[in-house]
Length: 370
Image (cartoon, rainbow, N blue to C red):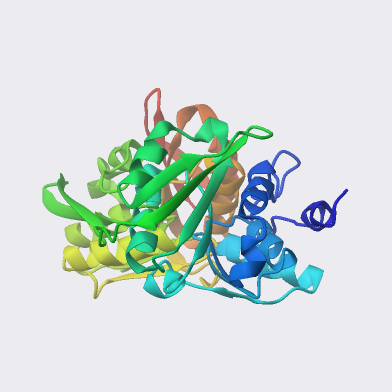
């Protein structure tokens, strides 16, 4: 076992979902670092984007980087990196937003490829617009999640793009020669929801982008049936569609929108601004409903994710449903839309009396009263 293997073996996912089937690193982390080779120590200041739980950041520091500017979209990923670094006694990295300061002057960017092409497009534009002319991007992932579309997309922002040989079901894309394309993100699209025009604004990594996903559409069909409340929470808000549609339909209501994703929170803020309800919609990056007092919420809306990273896994939804139960006031209601085959009814019944509002082959809408 190499020193790096020993380092990786000590990494954990906490506070993200931990499960024997989920891991804090994979072969693509090692391949990215191997493809970077001595560049890591030669350039000194390395940028890492998309690190999941610290493997790339701590691996770069272990390989000789003087410092790492790192962007992780999920707050639980940031906290996992911090916890792993503390456990290993390692320092030398700083968290950044996905903005020009992250990549300004950078000559080496290590990237865990996102599954979303839109997320990759936003990252590529940012790096190719603001990094040093000599910048090299080394972007890796699991082969099963990669496509030739990624090569083509990177070629819109960089002159030279080529792929490495595969290893242990992983592969790396190299990109050089920034074309200075400028920034086209976030993007927007106009919709009509419950008789109201609604503009969705989305950054690349926001779930569903500028569209409205089918689950949200299903819950929005029952917008008029939601109970009266002075304040509501849009939990795991994505682009904020549920909470903002409610704010548009009810001019007096105030909405707190929370999500673990920085892209989701930025998208929600932009969507609220575009629809003229920013003064009544507060978006906050958070792990679930942290900071929301117990038994304080009268109405919570939830369209939970059914993936943890690339894996289909109910762990995140289970945590969110449990947190909603903690935060609900007596008499408060949780309105949840979920994939019918996943069977969350037992979890909801633990919170309180649950009734089925609607159900089809794909989605079930329930209302749970504490």
